[in-house]
Image 1: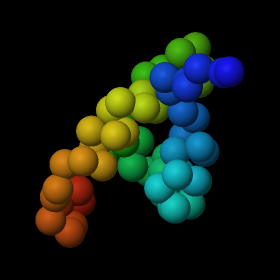
Image 2: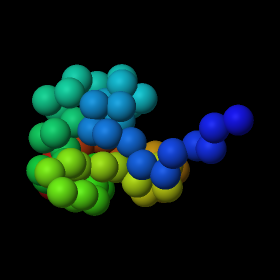
Image 3: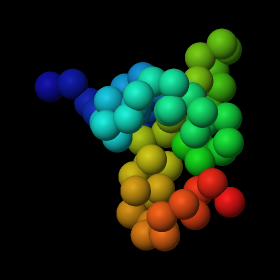
Image 4: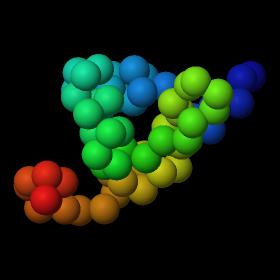
Length: 64
């Protein structure tokens, strides 16, 4: 049995969220999707993503 990974790629995160790859990278750039840089790779911590999704926030709040 394989243990669940602690991080996701930005592409995997986009698929999970149902958004496009470019939009996911745009959200990384604005800081809305937290990432950890490991070498040249950008990885999204699974716990940070879950926390982000658990926090209710009004529409368009992210763009302010």
